[in-house]
Image (cartoon, rainbow, N blue to C red; front, side, top):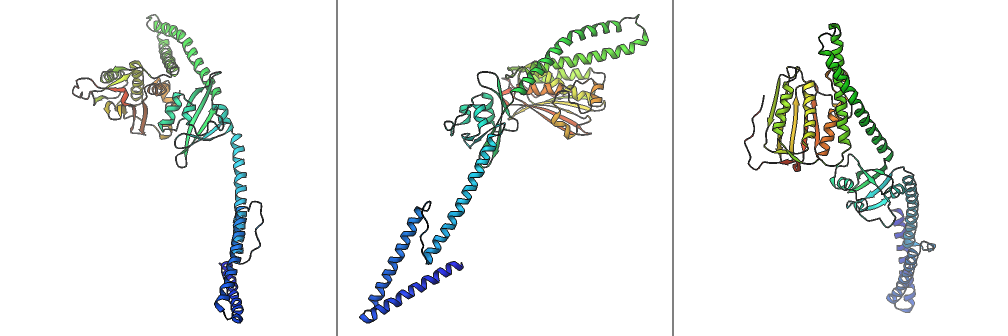
Length: 443
């Protein structure tokens, strides 16, 4: 403000001096007004010349020196010079920062693609260009799903659920597997992170092949061993003091057979990425069958209920659905005490079909729930071995539900019980032509 007041005072002094000069010139001539007008006009012409000089410098300030002008125009030029220097300083810093970002992103082992709200490519780094065969500047401004057309990625991009990345097979030569994950940021913008996971996928394929082959080769010897053990246990001439070890051998052989059966089932499901074929499944009849299986067990909960609240049927692979539902009911029966209860429920609403198994068992601690569907993961390994669990049941459930476009929901309270729910989309639900009455609860 002090500079502005100084410039204003200097201009006022100059203007006052010009008026006095005009009076001195007009007094001898007898025309005071004419003298003042002449001097003021000359003063204005001088100011216009300074203004034009400043205007020319503003247009050519990149190479021209600022004019030496005093007064208010001089203060304006000084402020413009300061702003120009500050702008140039920040521009240089911004350019340096941008170059550092470009060098750092170019050195990243993963590809990075910036997308706008319309999924159009704004920028990509060198690794993204290498992995996705992108070209600059030809591909800038194009929709990414027009360049990466794998159905898995197109569904992932339009689905809006970006927590889990999409893994696609890309390219026409050697198998190249890419993991693509969207990270939203800013106002409608998104980062597409691209990672080469070919090595991990090959190792996973080798692991799956090994497990499948080993399980297949072990099945025949175990069948022979189980047959001989059963024959020995039925032989009346067999020594009585060896019957208890023999029974334990039979139990362990049966447990190994069950593990191998689950491994083969899981390997078959993992080898099939396609969507499960659809056939009508009477869920009510299936639940009644599962209830009878639980009731025939020597150690079972006191109460086993079936509740069918809808006449809608499920569309899917019946053997796979039976396997998934059986594993959920089997787990509930194993971990529910004799005085407890189990309820199987099926219902249909606008969101699709829903199957739940609710028990009054031991419950599960919250930290274990996210890992329950992992292979061989057990909350209590000692109890799982005693109950004959393989640790593969929920992994089978997860794969079956994925093939049917369904989701698994687990809710549990330690000491109270658990609820395992399978939620199927509306496309997997059908209704009979004539709707019968809702079935009653079976106890």
